[in-house]
Image 1 (cartoon, rainbow, N blue to C red):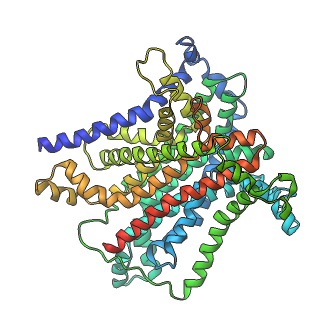
Image 2: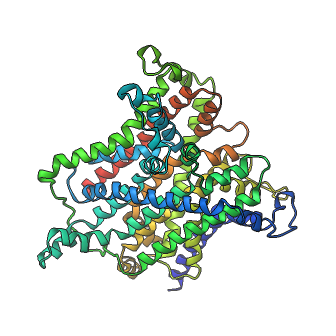
Image 3: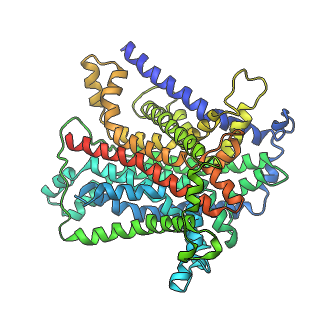
Length: 557
């Protein structure tokens, strides 16, 4: 028993050390900056003096309401789009299932600011739609419904993959049992199958809400014309516009922390009300049902969602990348491969930026995957003290905009008394990506651990396995599908993260997002879009290989 407690304690210690390094350190300096306005000058004078002026801002209430409304709107629309698709994917034999998975993964790989620019160029006056159909939808695009629509296209894959994998794990076995006892198919689904998907659904909706309230690119690009200001755009103004107001930015960030923790507490309340364990060691039938007469309507629905979320943004990006000049419009004489040739020639460091981003993306996926699995195990399966604090640390990055995380990292690691520091190296980018993206593997792994009965680990220990062996040989393989899916999402986001990269990227270290951003600043929109299109193609290859291998492994099992 002592060795078992020591093994669990080691897991908890490793998870705690990783969370402190990746999350607690930058957040601590953000908190210190909010309390001590002169921290950047090395002074702790006048504590709390910036709090009242920041909270007395007459626009603050409206910004909070806008932020909450945007988050709830994106959550609602993402659920309406993703849940029906995920249920079909998990319970039925969907033709071309892996292809649909790939198509729905692509929107998450398109940088939000790039996708938003693509929609602007498509729906604005004299945009692509106006040139083809003679009308535009700029009134809809530059409004709250338009912002929610564009952001949903980027976030619904989070819900789709989480719920589809959870439904696939639940299967139709429990619903069939309910039908044996007299329940109809609809009642069996609503009362048995759907409630068992609650962990995955709650975790994914929490992530979507957090992503929505901290997203900067889309509200900044579309909301300014509509006079729609949210907390994250206000934080950016305080960090980027003169005079710099770091204390004000930190205080507004703490308000985002409060919002995210509210969603986190709601998720915990849902998950602790009842048991959702479905993996008990007994074999389950994994066969899926045929779609029958619903085959073509379902395929039409999947095709429509894929067209709107993947096809149209990619087409807008490609057309812009092929355009010699933006003012030339949709004309064959204005199309060519000059922008792609410029990227391949690497005259501006495009290939080096691509290699750096892919390397950092893979490293961030591995680090967050390992740390996320250990942290989720410590929170769900261990009985050690401090589990609640660890869980709180895993949710903190959801509430911290990338630019604030970057400021926290600068404040933490740019201290003259540090003997060794990652500041001004590529490691500072890795720390930023890990801090921002860690909640995704943690939430996926937490949902998976909630569905694994304690009897499996107990049986392994009775047979002489150590806690580490039981974790590595039993628990980790069971959570691997969801964990790998979350790591793919981390890779996709890390390779195109913008705000933190712009702030903390060292001199001479260029990544994809900063390369594209510089092209936009210089007016080379076509070159930036060409780089974005190449990035999407390359970053799609790795998820395609991984999903294919996962599918083959499932067939072999």
